[in-house]
Image (cartoon, rainbow, N blue to C red; front, side, top):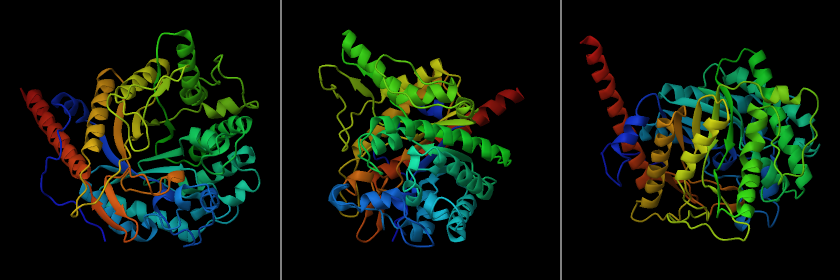
Amino acid sequence: MTLLLNDTLTRHGPLPSAGTLATLSKNFIWGVATSAYQIEGGANAGGRGPSIWDTFAHTPGKTRNGDHGDIACDHFHRWPQDLELIRSLEVDAYRFSVAWPRVQATGAGPWNAQGLDFYDRLVDRLLSRGLQPHLTLYHWDLPQALQETGGWANRDTAFRFATYAEAVARRLGDRVASIATHNEPWCTAVLGHQTGQFAPGFRDEAMAVQVSHHLLLSHGLAMQAMRAAGVQAPLGIVLNHSSASPASKDPADVALASKLYAGFVRWYMDPLFLGHYPQDPGLTIYPDVRTGDMELIRAPMDFLGVNYYMRLWASASNVPAPMPMGATDMGWEIYPDGLRQLLTDLHRDYRLPPIYITENGMAEADRLQDGKVHDPRRIEFVRTHLEAIAQARDAGVDIRGYFYWSLLDNYEWDSGYTKRFGLVHVDYETQLRTPKDSAYWYRDLIRTARAMATQTTEEEAQLWQL
């Protein structure tokens, strides 16, 4: 059962300032985002093969409470209702990912018609509801069969990925509003291969560094393959980024901030936009790069997706961040100005394509009470981050849209079902979807911004007639 947003205009919290709304009211896309493994379920349905997350999550001790994504939000079976829910939010766009093992069970060989048909129907139904589909090709669910031949540590996987990207783009690229190759390659490389926190669960820094290069190479190869196939959809990548703040002016703190920023942001931005890896005294391991790799990696992009959740706090003596606005249920500092700083720094340092904020949101310990979920801190989180985006846009950064993470409470990787990021509460036992106060607030924000854009357009038209 899905509870749609009713039509009543509500005020669950203050909207952003008039100046922010004015800045974000024109040529700006409002959306929500999800990923396949976190919501789809249907792990053994429709010809889907196993992914590295199926293997990892079913390994004892790897995830909270042994949670896995076999059912998750059961979106594979409930997607028509979920699309109605998205439409009731009155957003412009929906960002989702394709599960590679759902369309190609082993990452090689025959394509699964049932899986491709699933995404075909999803895209067509989104369009019929006036919603822009924004597609991500890889959100961490590598086919397990490819992991058994080395996974992302094997250079050949980059070429497999390009074949997969071309096939999906040929099938859906004539209708989607954008295609991103990867979501947050840092997470795949570092959390999956250095810290062991994510699938496939390795703890090898040198491997993680080489994996990061193969991910970037696969992006470049996929861009080349999709463009050669004549795909017209805008193409890009989605990176998780943070600003970096030294705890003090102490040289040790400043050096640590530089190292953290180089490893988290510049490690991906420099190859993509400058054609080389960053040189920083704190970085000591570099990948094997072959002739021609960087030319592929730095292929021009039509857009850049930026995911922002928190800043990097750099203290060589482990002084904790001050956290004046508190922390999310993940323990992450709430620091909206870091998003403004990040965007203006990127704008200063690189020649950028248009930017979309493809993820931004917070986990909160939400509770369903009397059929409602009151989440004022989430509303304040979004409001203050939108203020930061508007400030960056006013400073000249070309930001085209904002996607809240996430539409639904969902499977939060190694945290299982204990962390709730959604605008919509999900009861995992019954699959009941209940919009939270933040969902109504977000819808009313969008309505207000649209009304302001319409008024501005009408006023400009009147001025032209004078």
